[in-house]
Length: 288
Image 1 (cartoon, rainbow, N blue to C red):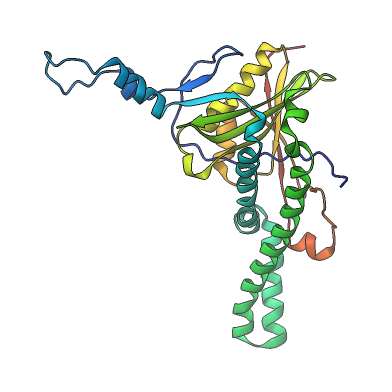
Image 2 (cartoon, rainbow, N blue to C red; image 1 turned 135 degrees about the vertical axis):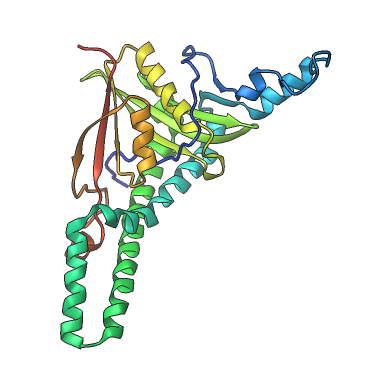
């Protein structure tokens, strides 16, 4: 299958803040809660401290490690990526409509025309349901094609696409021995930038600062490899994703209206019921 290299980054929802400093490139990133770093004040002064083994066990249980991808994790990484992209179907179909005033106006005119032609309140009230159903259908159709394309290109062989080429890497976030998040970096030597790609966190583990730790790992990688800037593109609808990028220091540098994904036919119906906005972000690390 011939597919373009898509530039979609999955949105993530981050609630908890993480203030870990950036570690070395060959070391794992670890997130430790404050309760693990400071002893409890509720006990009496004479109470004995917890055994060292128990403290180490708590650290191991509650810590999130960011480390390089291993080929044995290919399937779980693809699952996290797949689930993250599938979330975009209802988000694009329904939430995305809020960002499309012209489309809302068009749908409103269609409702008025429906009432004028049919003189039926019932049919007019049913029209929004039909329109939302069509939006969901086309969102699912296009995004599934994009997903199939991604799973047959870079996500089909992460080791070959990200781990072997110089200037690229793929990391996983591990919690309780389980891979719970992913992110990739792809270097571009022509303009000395590195692209943050494929960021996604398992929906069961969000709100723990995992996505921010993954993002910082990419920034650390860019600094250690002397890249001048980090770039990313996203079609995320949820504001939480955009706030995450801004919290990492990225600046919004532009938006592409009616962004086209691989597999889009650009038919009249598709243009009516599926629209994407592609946001570009950039973090300048140093001047060239």
